[in-house]
Length: 156
Image (cartoon, rainbow, N blue to C red; front, side):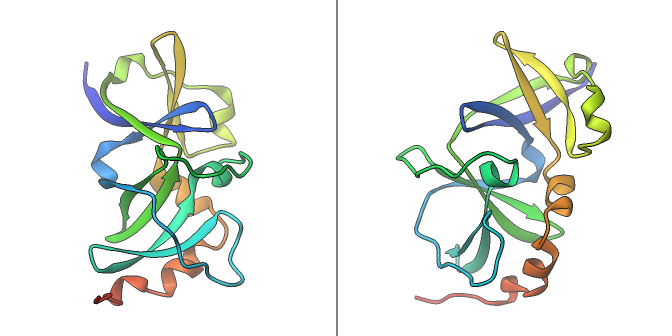
């Protein structure tokens, strides 16, 4: 029995688990600079630790409706192929160890390949998301990554 460590995030009252190995940090929400002609789930860009970072609204990317940011809104900074990308979530609540034996496969996962599985946590189902696969499937992200913001350091 092996455990995986996940960070629990809330998006539109639903809890999702993201593998902590992909997470760089959790940041407070800040104002983004919008980018023209980008999909609605692209919030824009912000400088994080001097690096211009694209920001994706995880809720919209998962098909939820747009929400207003609150004091608990966070940016989960992840690394994809060495490039930082920020995921906007309503809350980042916990870090949990989940036994791989408790992760169940669901038939819908054949159509939605970024769902790693589901696990029952505190009488609720926790959907485990493979952020790499999810971001591979997001239309426009490759183009956004090709802009290569990561070469642009911001000095202030």
